[in-house]
Length: 120
Image 1 (cartoon, rainbow, N blue to C red):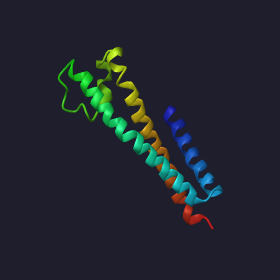
Image 2: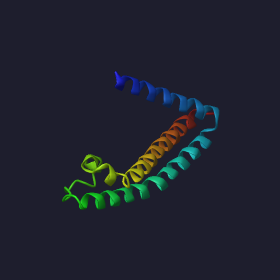
Image 3: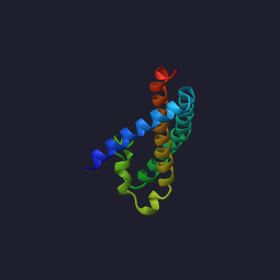
Image 4: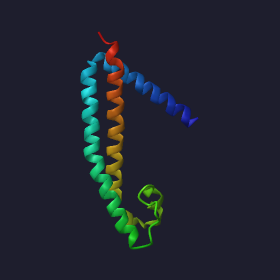
């Protein structure tokens, strides 16, 4: 049931973005989306990199790291105590926020591009 609601919300969001892109010019929508995407990259890449460094330092003191740790680091969060996770969390949240901004910016830019040929 949750998946069905997620699909409906996604479709409504894309349709809403299409109507917004029609109300404002598609070129403005594309530009806004690309700026949001760039902001997400500027936030997410350094924060994600530093998140991996801080997580590595916290885990290295406690255990030998598995070879896959850098590809699926979230699976290792439960191995940290709350005190050890405290310096990791802000970087994790900042990286996730950058990722969300990238997704939103990309969707907005794609919505502007998809409406562009249809506008007069």
